[in-house]
Length: 109
Image 1: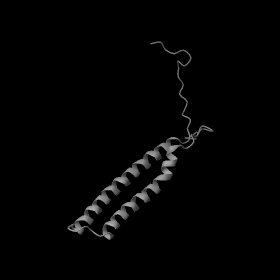
Image 2: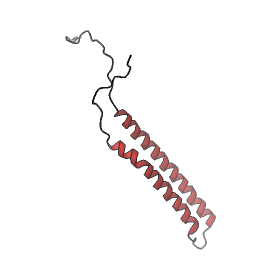
Image 3: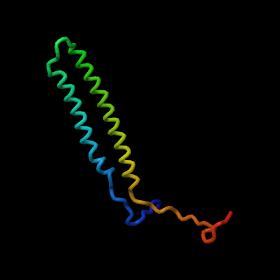
Image 4: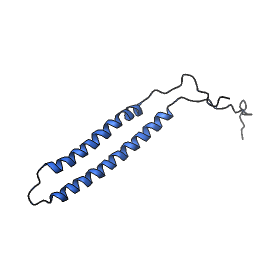
């Protein structure tokens, strides 16, 4: 018994979801590296006079972590959506036949 009968020659070509899935790792790496660079420059560049350096570094680190978590959450959400579209565009399957008794003469009720 064959449970999955595929419809021959029916597959939708990949669209925008394939481009999104291909682009997301690059966006993740560039985003995380840019946030790390921001935190690095907060430590390397000299502070202005009268500014608490530890407080400034801590504030920038907290900001970088918050933006990083938001960025990675967005990337995960976009990846899940693109993957769902990619799976739904897969091959079509034939359903079991279901005889309809009034197929030739529809009921008027």
